[in-house]
Length: 118
Figure 1 (cartoon, rainbow, N blue to C red):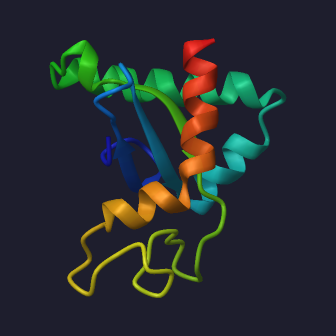
Figure 2: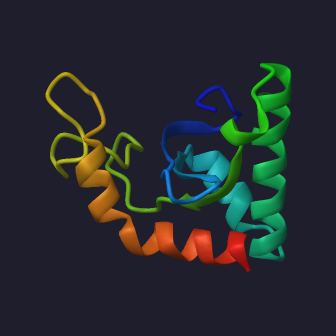
């Protein structure tokens, strides 16, 4: 999913008690502007998910590895990064700290699952 157009960072979250994958995505400035200019946020979200789905199909990912919902991270640093060592989302070797991310985005994760599960 990191190969998708305009994605600078992505963290995919899955849980054994939930059937779908969700993600937190940092978009490039130009892609975020494009997303923000959409008339309807839900339609823009569907378009983004469709792009991720097309990538998943291209790489023959099974259905359980496909994203069902994403949260757009809008708090980025001057370099356009949302996950950094400074905000404690990454280690000094630039690996994502999954427990920190799960705690930081707990509300957004729950919101995404509520939309998915209806």
